[in-house]
Length: 125
Image (cartoon, rainbow, N blue to C red):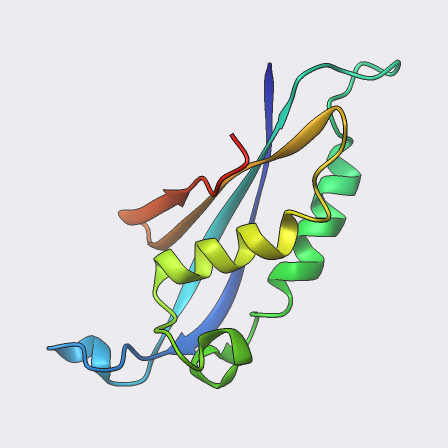
């Protein structure tokens, strides 16, 4: 098995509805994102997935969130745009794009700050 990842980022605003504290107020973050693809084998060029392809596909989805008020997006109308929901959103958007006979999306890690974040694994493994 090969775990292949790329790191990217986006900036956005959000607020957490019904949160008992300051995070209920509108504020912003520079989220860091890591997307990991798990390959069961490598191709004839020696790659599980080309980094160029992985970056292109991930950035096309991350760009949907960049410089947005996340609360106004359809995906977060009925749920808070927490890091957990952001990671699940990215995973679910990328799943149909990053699933191949040789590889599949394995996880999405989202860092809200330098010292806090989480990893979402979805149901592909």
